[in-house]
Image (cartoon, rainbow, N blue to C red):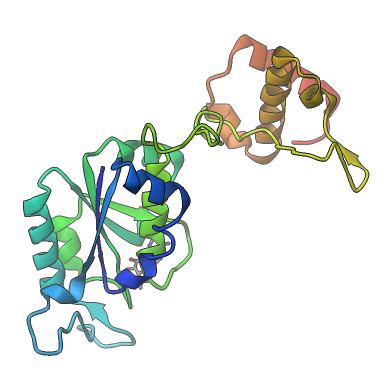
Length: 247
Ligand code: SAH
């Protein structure tokens, strides 16, 4: 999977992309990340990438020409890659969007800054537009990092045996069960018996039930869309009887 990132601040990515899962995925050549400085495509002496907005008002707008030249140059190298803008107007980054993006051969991610980018860049080049949520970031870089991270985890081989994507939250439409590690008692709180039992079937059932319980309590919207087995439905009935008043 090829990621090309267009940014005014390529330095922001060192650190997040040089540790842990992303670093290992790069080392194993499962992903290839290229950072491109938008200024490199600015043609004037000062390498200007922004200008004041038509219509006046505060802030600056990222100029169309350097971005267009950058996108076209990267597209000519990676013609199958999808151009993804980052903006608060985009579709929300969710697990299913990450799954969809992970199926593409490559992504060209455009990081906005200031008030955003000239709308004509969107009109001409945007194939997708991703938002991290209903809040405003100072730039698209953190959104690009979130896209690269969430997509990379889904690429087969990116997670080692100690991590796992299968049971992660949203993988099966539910939130994940709670985790515990040593010691067996901490500040008076113990670890659920099933997890200490060594009985794999008991552990599996406990985890499934807690996953259902958590999703029902915290995200009933997910539960109503999840594909549930007969066993799941039976567990939900039990959960309902155990705590009829929440929800
Ligand atoms: N004036 C714009 C916000 C610009 S913020 C507005 O009101 O909609 C500058 C840049 O940060 C944007 O171009 C975008 O690339 C990025 N950004 C801000 N919020 C974001 C979000 N919620 N998700 C993804 N990118 C975001």
